[in-house]
Amino acid sequence: MAGQSVGASQERDWLFATLMPRNEFVRAVGRFDGDATAMLRQSVQAAGRAFDELGACYEVLDQAATEGKTIAEELGRCLVAEDEHGISRLIGRLTDLADRVRRSEEVRVVVSRILGQSEQPAVSVKAVPHLAEEQLPRVPTLYDQEDGEHYDDLERMLEARAERLPGRAHAERLGQVARHLTTVVVRMVEQGFADGAFTADSLKESRSACELWSRCLAERRRDLQ
Image (cartoon, rainbow, N blue to C red; front, side):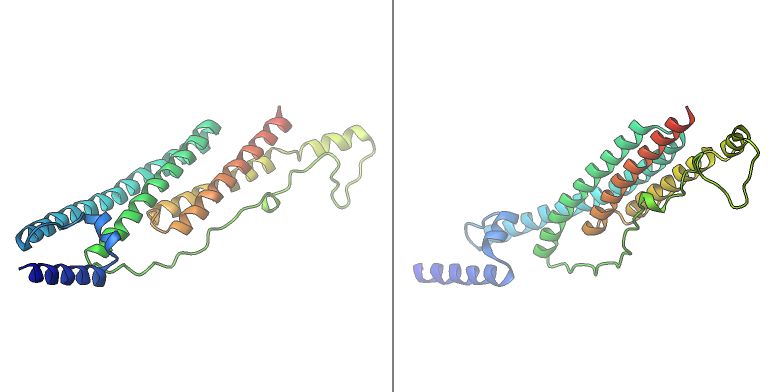
């Protein structure tokens, strides 16, 4: 009997080692102890827990898609209202949401491996576009001179140039950054945060665009006050 017990134990260990490293298996579904009936019962229970965990992971993805869409809509309203605090808060919520999905995806990968489910091929995602301040329209100054411009006196020259200053340029700059920020966020939300590298790049660009938008807003307020 002892020999049979040792042989069964060796066969079980070989099975575990073939499927996946034993330490990973134990961490994921628990250690099997007892006779064959108990082992089968624990196997069924472990599989049930694994499927429950997998379902919870997909629920996180569904919730992230819904919440991300809401955040993107709120971002658009905050940009129109020029609510700097609200925009910063929304970027923070996106970061927290992405972290939640990342942790859930790490669990899903392990559980899928245990259940023998193959991974879906990665969807090709385009690179995240970048917007630098140098790409924005230049804000004109009183010292700018157009070709052929000539005035008889300094006062008339300054009045003419002041008519070209600088409200339209500030509006164009703010609008360009706002559209860029919205595009980056919407694309990230549409991808469901599942691509870790794309999400990280999108969050980085979102924070950069948020800072650029705030600088443009401060410059407009300074020039037009």
